Image 1 (cartoon, helix red, strand yellow):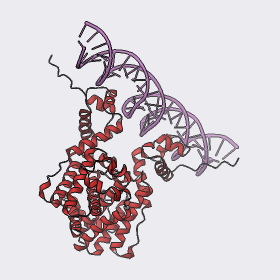
Image 2 (image 1 turned 60 degrees about the horizontal axis):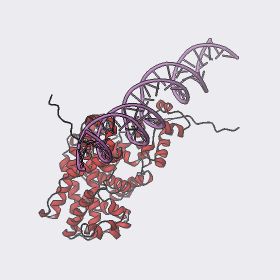
Image 3 (image 1 turned 90 degrees about the horizontal axis):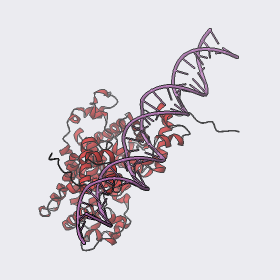
Image 4 (image 1 turned 180 degrees about the horizontal axis):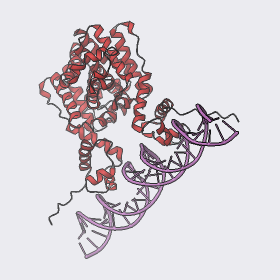
Length: 208
Length: 208
DNA sequence: TCGGTATTCTTACGTCGTAAATACGGCGCT
DNA sequence: AGCGCCGTATTTACGACGTAAGAATACCGA
């Protein structure tokens, strides 16, 4: 008899369910009806808390952003920034099906703005002028989001080579890809990501 | 009387029409029916040349890749690579609505593989060891595609600030964003992109 | 208990991707 | 010229989608 009382719907509960659903089934599988039934509710009920599907997707990127672990202020600017981008990439690993939303529909919330502010503060206090701080922010963000996307979806323009093994490609036509066949088989993505981060951060330090 | 004889359908004609259509109307507006009528044909006719909508999208990124202007070999590795990524970014400007496809569904064609091969060749001949060549390729590609995406969709996590002007944000809570209000109003994206490219390329040269 | 408000459900419409069956048009035969 | 073949185009149909409009229900303070 003791049927669990159904919890009331709420924007937050919907968004979190949506993230879980997409984590499990993929972005394309997400529909209002299916998300509704996930919550034991009809599709149209969702519209009381979310104005349409676009807003639902936007809300999902809010959830992701909320999970981002912002490192504390006290550990030196370089380390702080490093950790921030590592955390960003971690998001991609934890939600590979949701993450692309973040790239395709940039967030427009106070939380997002606050992150930018925090970031710029760190760089300004490190001694960069405003212009350079901005450039640095964008260079790092571009790199990190590009890398994370590539990692999730397969590296653009590095297709069958790595996935199927270079074996099927003629050695004569593609000697350099072939040369990388073995290393490509198990790249250390952590190291690779850090390589790029090092490159950019080292360059930035020189401009201090 | 002289009605223009309707050209026969073909995969290529379909893909090009799809790119034109999306350039004009946006990705979300693309449907088999509308693309069909664009070509004076019923939706189902398209399926004789393209196995489904997914394949259509893949084909569209092939078209984009085909438009990429690969710089000649003879101008020194650094300049060649610079020009290649500039051309890549140009793609994003010319097809802002199609470009995201390239990020979300990495191409898997011989043309794509050939581009990688060409790239690796350039870096190997410049003197990089295979491992570093690979890392360099991916660092640059991540940066470039991340930057191009951000440019197209609005910079992730730099939202209302730039778009609405920082005026609406309290100066006390967001001093650093506010500080950038004016510069943000007209950033020179070319310069900004080059800044990041410089950073990475400079770092790479040191590892030669 | 009542009345009103906020939430949920039902029904309905137009659009989507695409499977299946049908019709068509141009070709090589005889 | 007539016939049949085969690839292309059309018709029709199905189930799923997002969501507008209205009806039903649940909840809450008086």
